[in-house]
Length: 384
Image (cartoon, rainbow, N blue to C red):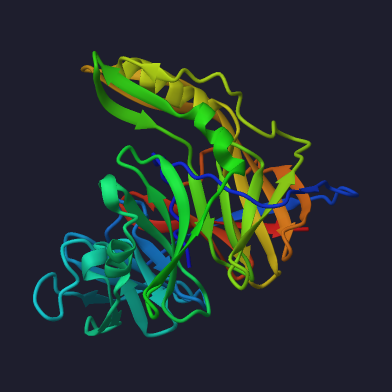
């Protein structure tokens, strides 16, 4: 499954396919209710500094596995019982070692996990921390030559139901997206997907310079999700997405029309800035305009949800450091059926902050909430 954490990342992706424009037919009304639950940690101090950005949900939705980088261990949390279960330690070095980097990791079935923080050390482990087999993703990439010139492959997904097949993004040294890549580690082959329709994301890419030196980049968010029957690639700029069809190695583009929000950000971003303050102003502009989040799959109701939001944002300076302050946050929810046809959309008045980490369990959206350094969740229930 894909990560459900929300982060601003400096990645771009481009895509191709045949567009299918979707519009809402007769509007269906949404209503919401919200409650709060708290996880009993027992004697454990759970790792919350990453806001569950290093966590994966089991396929049945019962267990959450949260990586603790301090202890190099997975914290297993029972979401049915709302309590900490156990800590699963892993070794960094030696025959059973994962290498120094653990994330990203991907749960495989009920009893194993792919640890791919370092592709050179990518391996499958059981949930007792024992190495079962190595995965030769890095070797396939190196043999193909696509990493020449400083290019990087960022693994994003294990293709569900496949045997040793992985999806990821190829980026250049500046984190600019180049291609979508499928790696077949069993047969030492890879497939490149030359993507075109997301080229317009380049209009939102900003370079920060200091004189003649390039010191940073700001790009668009691109998200990959594998719940339900579809593998979905979307972005935070445009109201559209791609469906990847693994059996054909092809992409289908779907675009939508919102009645509540703009369908894209305004493309007036400068190509280059020369200060931290200017970069933060652009970041604030991006947050104030519409932001489309990743899709999440509701197994119980066989439908997808997607948050989007707008906010009033200002740049705050303190001791020479710049940060963003968001107020008057407006959060929206769009509902899609299992075939990714848009059903309806609504503002969510119960949510007044930007949802950062969330997933669907038992037909409700669980949103991470740090409650005085204890693990809690807001549970948003949806009536349609």
